[in-house]
Amino acid sequence: MIKSFLSIFRDSTNSFEGQRDGETILLLLRKHIITLYLKLGLFVLAAIVPIVVGLTFIPYFSLHNLINVFLFISSLWYLGLWLGIFHVLSIYTLNTVLVTDRRVIESDQHGLFNRITSELNSNRIQDVSVHTNGILETIFKFGNITVQTASSEAHFVFHQIPEPDRVKDIIMQITASVHSGVKASAPL
Amino acid sequence: MPPLEIIFNIVVIGISFVYWVIAFIIVYHLNRFGIGVQPKKFAAIFLFGSLVLASISTILFTKVDITMFIK
Image (cartoon, rainbow over all chains, first blue to last red; front, top):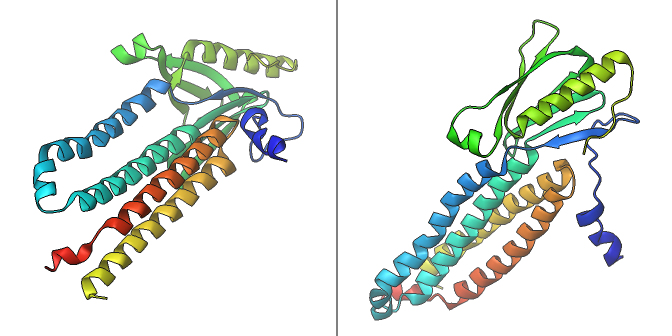
């Protein structure tokens, strides 16, 4: 039983809500990991605060018998930081772009209760372009991918995607295979 | 029990309640909407860390003598 429970951490399939019969996920994209590190860096700085306060005011706390109060408040601080870190991780993890053999689905998670899901059938894709802007994006090879549809409706933009050129090529291959009627195979 | 102690206990219980409600929402979202293995791992690490940190906070809470603020 424990073995089968632990298998969810190894064998969880890349399935998603609303997946159609026989639909295969070819790409599961999230924002580049560097964007996550930049946000988590703030939490690392915040984690130092109780240590600095403790080292600075330890004689005062000892004198007024406030050590336990300080430790308790610090523990609440770290509890709050833990929550904040995993809130950021949740938003990062749930912000996905799924490229299947039939469509492209973007799940844009702004908050825990604020999510926009958009999808686009592969046969409606006309043009895919990549926009890399800035030194970080150039060095770490990530950027925005814009997908233009056949209709006049607004285009889709996937932000801060790693290896955007490779992703663009794969989307174009899938679109070409959909148009030609040949089933696309998994690139990963 | 002095009023300050009662208020302090209620505030701490309130903070704890809010924490676990948000923690549940995060774990639920990661497992319910997360795709693949990574979100499940995050949820497990988060839950384990929350239990450890909440236990430490509870132990430290029992050591706090709030009545000294009245004195």
